[in-house]
Length: 150
Image (tube, rainbow, N blue to C red; front, side, top):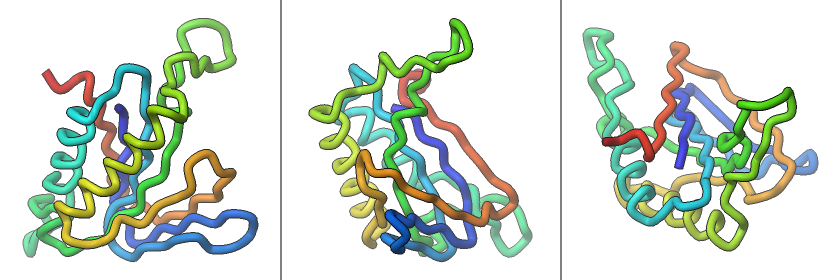
């Protein structure tokens, strides 16, 4: 599993011209799920997301987590994070997990993160054509891949 985590002052998802979900200060999380990803990947990534110290403390040092700041989270599935760009100019998504694996893992990630931060994780709609808007605060953008944790 691969995440792109952005610290935001606000973020939203619009589908078909209608606002679907939005958050204020917190994290915008793009979630890419590949073949072979498991619930163990979800557990590790949810814990990392909740505890990652990327919010400023009273001295302006990135020392506070989503939990510490009582921030919000918006998670959007994005199979394109699994792209292989080794050959040619057209990305290959052959390693992206199919719906039967990806949807339950995406939902599990959102549920686990919700439990860790003590509030609902707002979501996009799996497989929908979404317009994502955000104001990246910092900017701070972190990429985490569960396959690189060891």
